[in-house]
Image (cartoon, rainbow, N blue to C red; front, side, top):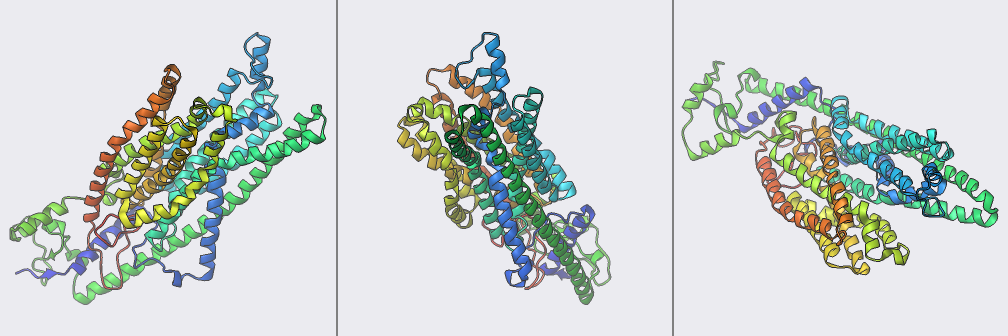
Length: 591
């Protein structure tokens, strides 16, 4: 009768295979630990704690001020219009007899030029996969360096465009270049919310909380341009009271240059600090994972020698058709029985049949990169993320016109201002987000996103009272907070560490492609007498299938979760987790 090797040795084999794979790919940059291997707060020295604190400070400021700012496009357009950018387009129209409808020289061509700037910046979503590939190949530090450089050089071009608004050969290229670079920065910033959270390897709960906080700040960042516009209005009022009318424009331009110049200086300081501490902590984590791998390898080799087991004689569970036990035939003689013979020796039982079926499933994180991106859970998550993202972009882009149709113009755009100012309220959703994710898991959290989307859609479709729309604003703010925090955290739990960059970037690419549907919906809204009713109804009705799709995502996650092998080696040491956000220790789906 062949002797039986214990589960302990089974987990050793699993660990050795994982270590060999990691060594072959040199994949030490994306680091995570299982619970027992994670550095506990008590083992961190004071300097490490300070570095993590400073990382969070600089990351929060950078994401809030520079990653999400471009979503608050309206106030920035007002700033540039007041400065005279693209004004030459209206001057040409005046000479040719075309329309120049307002005293401020706002014409259709000029408005179209500003909208094209925003549209081009949205297309930078399509760079997500490229950034992900660079991150997976050269390390996640590529993202933080790219984020810093894109924002700094984008703001430099913006300052140049503001300085020379009347020179069309400088004005137009600099403005387009500025917002393309800042759009790239925004795309990378969205990806960094995940990568920054994954640096906190001490626990998966900490990682999810960091990801949630940074995503909430990303959403709240939409009010950054509103703050710049308000600051410019205050200082311009001072100048207009103290200067003659002929000097107001020049003084306003100089003042705007100072404001944007100060914003540029903040970008240098914040993104510079973010890059420095990100790199320091990332390098520390790489060092820790290398030390852990070497230590585990030495201990396992010594343990195998003590038990008289040669690693070459160990047989994996799935080779034998079982999941829990590993059988080595003629172990004492060091002879391995052919696989076909070993399988025939196994007794036939329902238990064994279940084990063979269990072994036929390969966890998503252990598949090849292409197979991970083609997995059921990821494909469904891509559809889910794309639909809700285009709904989000639709609401942000059409808010001014939608509220105007409801009579907001007669109120001096008061409700549009309320809508913009409510973006920071997403921070108040964090405690609820934390409770739902940690107590009820990702499936429930994704369904909450659907519920909030339906509630917001009902308010938009069924009520024309502007005061009731404020209730919709609250639902929409919570919806945005939950959407990005939950989906990005969820993807990080089942996608392998060497693929997480591509996976996150591809989500943004899919969302960018799907957002082109909003162009057709906008044309439909302008053509129909009902205005925005039909497009809003499309999004409301479209959310209903997302409920079933979310159910299927939950089933796929549960299947993947149940396939986690028992990784325990001893009561005090475990094999490093393959999942990015850390392995769950229970059989429930939770972060």
